[in-house]
Structures are given as structure tokens and as C-alpha cells.
Amino acid sequence: MNALLPLIKREFQEDFKASRGGVFLLLAALVLSAFAVLLVSNTELSLLDNAQAVYLMAGIVIALAALVAVIRGSDGFAGERDRETLEPLLLAPITGRGLAAAKLCGLLCSWLALFILALPYVWAVGSAGQNLLPAVQYLFLTGTLMVLLFGGAALALSAKMRSFKSVLSLGLAALLLLGSPMVLGPSLRQSAVGRMLDLANPLAAALNTLDSVIIDSQGLSWQLARLTIMGCYSLAVLWFLRSATRRLEP
Amino acid sequence: MKFPVWKNLALIMLAAGVWLAASAAPAAAGDGPALKVTLHPPAGGLQMGDTPNFLGVVTNLGRQPAQGLVVYLSLVSLAPGDEHPVDLEDWSAQKALRLDRLNPGASDYRPWGMRLIAAGKYGVALTVVDPRENRPIVSDLVPFEVQPKATLIAGRVLPVALGEPLFILLLWGGMVFYSFRSYHKQKEEE
Image (cartoon, rainbow over all chains, first blue to last red):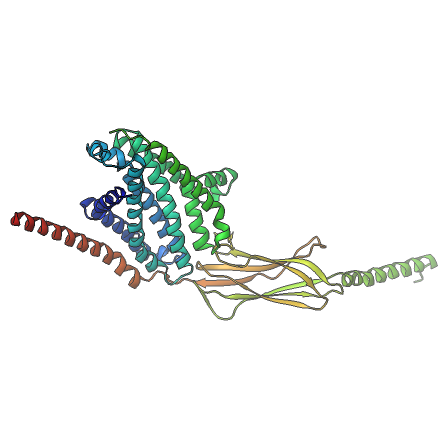
């Protein structure tokens, strides 16, 4: 535990004091700003129901969170290896699992920053509408699960694979693959195959949960199945990360 | 002109048959529940974001109580060239309910609320299904128009959209400047 805290602090400093952290926060704010301006400047979009606008904004936040988790997770061990800074880290009196835990805490800190950053935007587009508070609660919950899932998987791969670029390509490909059914639209996803894909896809489960809570005003009992699926995936990924970092190689 | 007796008899029998059939039909209808359903629109104009209540009335005009009635709302978009059924889930509307029992002569008054989420021309109708009848009873279609309303207020969105990146930029710039100054101060001291 004593060795874990300095490592978490190091991750936190890299996130918020180094230029990388600043650029990430600024880019995230710019993406959300661009979307918010698009919503008010477009005549058709400005007529959207507030709940619909909050759902769209929440979807963008989830996508950003997953993307950042993949990028940061890929950099976790493979990036350190590329920069030849992993070896000194391995000399620290901490196990590979401890290192993975510190990296995962760093990822969750990044997500927390993004979530806090997104709150004013969600309020701005949705304060006059319905379900704003449940939207914020479920955004936090689903976002945390997505970061654990995508970030954990990318971290585990980065512990196993040697190059940052390969892990990043694989992670982005997986993210695109899981995100592609969203392009199909609701009507195609209503078919049996679409429903199966939705059920098996954690990203779809997160977005469907937000849709159900924000637009359809459905309660927790409606979300339990989807939350369980996301939770199971996250646990499986954490188990994979645990076994992948049992013995780290420089 | 004179009719033969057998023709008179036949005419009398035909008239009696018609009379019997005519008198028997209402009696049969009166035995079971005869339902009437009406839907009343809310007063005044409707705008996006409003949550009006349409008053639905189901009346049992028969002599027997009606049991296990299913009442449901149907909403259709009547936009010319783009007519389609509307998913009531998105409109946060109560979609259906079950009436356990409706006594003869009794009426069930119920508000059917919905949240108007998109502008346009719509029609709404209420349907009652009696499990003992093979034909549902539908109210008249109530047409209504939802006026558009800008729900996203630029005065609230733009300050956030422009202010937040600027705030982060200033905060980050301040931190970089502070660490740069501390670094140089430390170097000068050394």
C-alpha cells in the first residue's frame, strides 16, 4: 500500500500537471463544446426534446471515456516499455498487480475529470427537461463500468504485448467493432439478431441504459439486466488484467 | 286487385318474421355489455414540452357488467407524406391499462397524459378490447397539432460551450507558468 500511493500520485500528476493531461482535458472540452454549439445553432437540433439532447451528450461522453481509456490503457505498460521507463518501475517494491492497480486508479481519475468536465454541458442542454439527475447518476455508473472494461482490457493487452502501437490499434479496432452496431439505428436493432448483438455488446448496453433512463424514464429494475452484463464484462476484464500482470517483463 | 289467400298468409308470415328479427336484435345487444369510448382533447394550443391530458371515457351501455377490459392509446403522426405510428414510450405516455369491472351504466373517466416531444400534426385514439367480443371499440380520432419550441436555450448553452475550454486553457496555462517560475526560482537559488 505504501508503494502504491506514490505510483497513483505519479499517474495523477501525469494526468493533470503534464502537458498530456492538459491537452486531453482541453480536447475533451472542445469536443463537447462543438457538439453543444451544433445543438443550438442547428434549427432542427435546437427543437430536440431536452431529454434527447441529454442522451446525445451522455453518449458522446461515454464514447470519449471509452476512447481515452483505450489510449491511456494501451500506454499503461507498452508505452512505458517503449519509453524504457518500465524497468525502473519494476524495481519499485510493488508487484505487477499493484502496478496495474495504480494504472487503473489513474484511468479512473481521468474518467472522473472528464465526468466533472461534462457536467456543465449536460446541465446546459438538459436543465429545462426531464430526468437530469438520473441521467447524471447513470452516466457516472455506466461510464465507470466502460472505463474499467476498456481501460482494463487495454492495460492487460499492454502488459502482454510489447509495442504501444499494436495495443492501440487492437484497442481502437475493438472499440470500433463494438461501436458499429450503433450505426444500424434502432429499427434494425429491434430484429432478433440486433437484440442479440445489443445484449452481448457492453457499449450498446451502456447506451441502451442511458436511453431507457433518460428518454423512457424507466427505473432501476429495467436496467438490472444491462448493468449485470456490463458488471460481468468488467469483472472478467479485471480478472484478465490480474492474470496478465502476474509477471511483468521489462 | 285481389290477392289469393295463400299469398296473404305468406305476406303476414313475412311481416311477422321481420318484426321478430327486428325486436330480437336489440334484446341480444342489451344482454351483454355494450361499450362506448370517447376521447376528449385538452383545451388550448399545444407546444413541445407540454404534458397535456386527454380525457378518456369508457361507458358501459349494456345490461351486464363488463369485465377484464383492456384500454389502450394509439398515437399516429399525420404529417403529410410521413404518416406513421408513434412509439408512445418516447412520449412518456401511459400506453395501456386493464379495467377489472365496469358496471352497467357506469363510466370510467381517466386522463391519458403524454409529454409532447416533437412538433407536428398528430392523431390520438383510445381503443377498448372486451375479451368476450371479437371486435375492439375505437374512439373517434382526435387530431391535434404540436407547435415547435426551441428547447435548447442558446443563452445557457453558449456560455458553457465557450467558457469551459477557455477556463481550462487559463487554468492549465497558469499551472504551466507557476511550475516554470518555481523551476527557475529553484535554479537561481542553486
